[in-house]
Structures are given as structure tokens and as C-alpha cells.
Length: 272
Image (cartoon, rainbow, N blue to C red; front, side, top):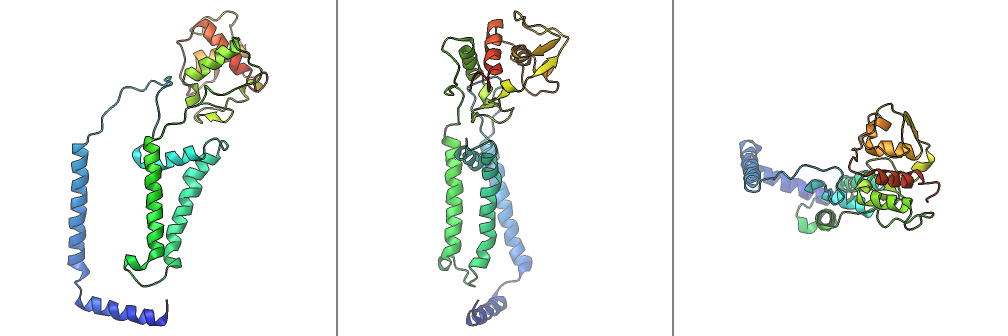
């Protein structure tokens, strides 16, 4: 700040302090009035626009579009913008890098624009930053609310899968049963569960002495490996992997379990 500007600021401040009203109780009184009005407006809107309770969640659905609360729509949209870069980039960009860059710009603004002028019309840099940030967040929020939720799974192609084969039928079952909402394959799908792109190369093996709900021909314990492991894990996830959070898919036929297991067991080896 230039010396002349500092002296002018000090004169104006001294004059305002001499003619102005004290902080207590005048400013505190006004702040309390505004706070009461804001809380009253929030309570009134909460009473006027009640939040409804939807139907119970069906974890195996393939049509539900998951969306966060409205105040996270802008982060939700940024996750979609950076989708399919790699497994970590969407989360890092949307929740760490971009928000921290904006926060750093907000903190740096007073150091970049050091003029004593308080009128917003005389502070184009601060005004431009505020407008761009709010417009950007508003646009991302609108897009996050109205835009389509990414849907994946049906359009993924693999080498080695022939039409009409058991693996092709298993791929269709996988795509139509909501599996892609939790699992990613070849960069498409959810990230709640493990990435299944190369799951067939892991050599999964489990020992389970119990009886699985649906009898699949040729599949029996107590040791399950290869396709048999995927049959067991689909019917009873906790039987194959104790503590698994995956829901059990108990509504398939014996043939469907086998077809899905054929598809999953070949991922990363026969089907790429």
C-alpha cells in the first residue's frame, strides 16, 4: 500500500470511528437479529419442504441411480469429469487437488489485491475471483443434479468371448445384475468393491464345509477353487471370504451361477 493511500485510509478510519456507533451493543444487536432471521428461514423451509423417506434399498438393483446430498453435487460432477483416468485420479482431483487449489486462491487473494479500497466496484480482481468460484460451483451443482449418472458394464468388450457361449451369458448376467455399481472392469464401473479386470489370475481358493444354497452340478466342497470358488462367492460371499460386505445373489439358477463363474474366472487370462 502506498504511503498516501495509507494516510488517507487512516484519516477515513479515524473519522468513521469518531462518528460511528460502538460495536457493543449496536453491531452485536444487528448480528443477533440477522442470525435469528436466518435460523427462522431455515426452520420455516424445513417445515414447508419436508424430506420424504423412500422405499427400502435393494442392494442388487441395476436401475438405481446413486446421488449424494445436494451440497456434494459439485464434487459428484467433478468425479464424473475425471472418470476413467485411473483408479485414484477422480478421487484425488475432486476431493483434494481442485478444492485445495480454490482454497489457496481464496487465501492468496488479500495478498494479491492489497488496496485499501473496500467498494466492490473498485476491486475487480476480488470480484472476478468470487464470481468465477460461485459460478463454477453453481454450474457443477446443477450438472451433478440433472446430469445422468455414469452407467457402465454392458458396452465392455473382451477378446476370447464368443457369442452364445457360457462366458457371453455370464457377461450379460454380470452387466444386468448391478455388479458394475460396485466393481470395475477395464476402467468402467464402481469402486466400492475390488477391481475385477484380472480377477481370474488371482487363483482364489476357499475351504467351506457347509452346504451352499443352490446345488450347482459338479460344484461341491469343502475346497472351492477356480470357477467353483466364484459360484460359492456369488451365492454366499461370507462363505468364500469371511467378513465380505458383498450381498448374496441367491436368485440365480444353477446354470446362471455357472455361466457367471465361467466369465469371472476367465477375466485377465482367457478374456481380456
